[in-house]
Length: 63
Image 1 (cartoon, one colour):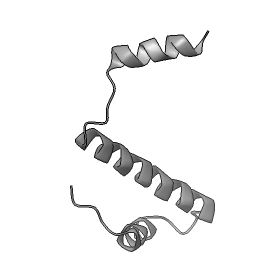
Image 2: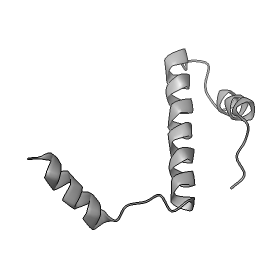
Image 3: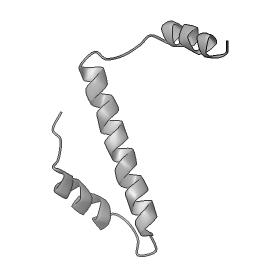
Image 4: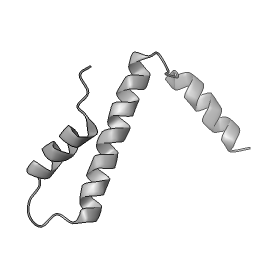
């Protein structure tokens, strides 16, 4: 996966927003992109959990 530098990502995001976008919305969008990319990297590294294992963990939280 070809990851852009942080500067390149910021430039891309800022070029694709309208003039009404607030700074907070821009930060939220950048954080969302970061979280998605982090998740993709975790999947590619095999750092995943099965649906059934997750369900079992969640049941344990309710105790």
